[in-house]
Length: 145
Length: 145
DNA sequence: TTAATCTCTCTAGCAACTATAGGTTCAAGG
DNA sequence: CCTTGAACCTATAGTTGCTAGAGAGATTAA
Image (cartoon, each protein chain N blue to C red):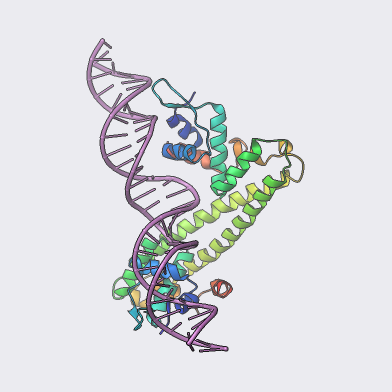
């Protein structure tokens, strides 16, 4: 039996976060010691590790709730879980692409800002000026309009 | 002179977000029409574009506030702005690296979950099992302990 | 003129935690 | 056995960066 602190250490999740997960129903309320402290077994550790991994993968808590409800009924089709994973994969890929573009932009900015005063430095302008911008957000702006 | 809607369209920022930026002091309060509607000039558009680009680059609003304060006094050394950009660059690189790992993990999960029931499906287990995990969060967990 | 479409202020809500206050329980050392 | 200090408890409020709603006033196009 693990205390909440040990559980948190084992799973790499902070103690208040565990209580928060319990509060919103992601984790079941565990048994308590005679002194009212939470006591967790192995299944709670598994479940929390699942949640943590899923969070790291970028799943929102609602998707995790779905996945957990699926795993509670393991005789169903895998298609739902698969669909969630596929959605997440495309989201992850989009994020990677955007961040790579941003990385290039920052590198360029820093290269232009080796020394000198802000008056000579392009950091501000690069961020402020649409026309110097290599990314595609103008397209996004138009699409949103 | 631009209304708030036009400004938002031009910069690719939603109207309530502009008012929010004004509220927290990122944008100065603009002049008003006789009917009390906000009217913006070119400098507001520049400043908002700056904010938007910086947000896209992953700068938190506090870092943007710093950068804007620097640009308001352009005779200072570029070193402060440069340091902010460098910090952001390493943060961006770390995010990219983590997301690439997650992408691989999701691809593996989906590959193993082509069809069948959840009982046969590895998605749940891959997310739940520490030992199958290719990422480095156990190290993080230990570092946090 | 009148209808549609802004825009205004204000308040409340969202995700996903994090922090604080004020108290209780537990494990180890003296 | 007792005390000390860490870890635990509940409950509430705060964080970041917006987003949504209500209800009213302004502007514009037909």
